[in-house]
Amino acid sequence: MFEQTFKNIDNILRIDGVATELDYTEQTSWILFLKYLDALEQTKALEADLDGKPYQFIMDEAYRWPTWAAPKTTDGKFDHNNAMTGDDLTQFVNTKLFPYLKSFKQRAADRNTIEYKIGEIFDEITNKIKSGYKLREIIELVDELRFNTQVEKHELSHLYEAKIKNMGNAGRNGGEYYTPRPLIRAMIQVIQPKIGERIYDGAVGSAGFLCEAFDYLRPQATKADDLNTLQTSTFYGKEKKSLAYVIALMNMILHGIEAPNLIHTNTLSENINDIQEKDRYDIILANPPFGGSEDKQIQQPFPIKTGETAFLFLQHFIKSLKAGGRAAVVIKNTFLSNTDNASVSLRKLLLESCNLHTVLDCPSGTFQGAGVKTVVLFFEKGAPTRNTWFYQLDPGRNMGKTNPLNDADLAEFVALQKNFADSPKSWSVNTFALSEVEGYDLSVKNPNGNEEVAHRSPQAIMKEIATLDVESAEVLAGIKALL
Image (cartoon, rainbow, N blue to C red; front, side, top):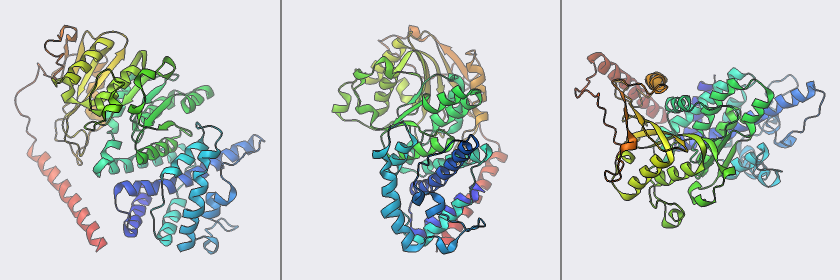
């Protein structure tokens, strides 16, 4: 039901003139969020009633979903006579509803409340749906969705993740928001977070790392105190870009974290020297943007001066870890061997201040739409590196949109990493012996590698061609529908 509803909404937005996958996600998000918020409030009101306690609604009655979006008759059917549409609806949304929701940011008692987060979301978003009639169609589709059970909520969060993935694959800066979820899950399985540990992502994007960490920890929360810890004092993030920040907030709320500890800021503009013990974290999970650049004013407080955004983030992460804290960070594989001063100095800092125990070498196509190869650095702060275990991920196929990375591809890595076991794809290096003269070169060179090129079978090639033909037919059908 959710999947078909999302497809129908995208079609309506396309006809209305909403231009891109990023905009589809943004516009679907604010409507979906308000419906979900109402369901959350109704559930809390019912629970309070069962406990014989009053419930104070967050939303004033005039701005609640059943009042403006989906009024019902006394028998529970949709009340078309009292439902706003056309210009009346767009005028209400643009001049009354959005200003009211934005005002929550000023009215909230604390920034770590759902009220404040509502204000932040609607301070960043505008309604781009021009036709009030199309908006009415979308609202009625969303109103049919139900979020009453954990199964329904899980399906919703799963499909919202799918929308974020499509947004990332659409290109432009959208790709910065999406890290393949199988890769994130493997990183989390290696790090093994525990309830009570604080988890941080300073380049939060769409909050994929924090949402997946919540899903990993949620089954371990067997007591009310555990649930409260997960809700209030476990997940932390910062994000610079407005749309990504809003998507991250909504993604976490739709996953079940009601008041996410996210801050809309440029992480790198904060003075690294001001980080104190209270600001440090037990776990860092991140995929910082690479290829970007920061001006000299931003670089000034960092011990290693560089314009490369990812290198500044890596310094920030090392500084932000507690002693004994654990991290898994995605970075370009050229970091392992570049000979410029910043790369050499950063490798030295990492090896001397942390135990870089594992490097996962990811193949091309891991990140769809990105032409760069990446590695994942797994390290623990507090003791120098002596040995590093390398694993060369090779799913045995060309990866892309039709063959994305999956959990099975990473199962061997997770299993072998537990004991740093040698295999045809994995080996250990005495990194303690690496010298400054050689630039602490960490190049991934598999001593067990076979130089033979693995060719795909004719059956595999034909299967991919057939899949591409189907996708092409779908694209052509979509174009014809617009003509």
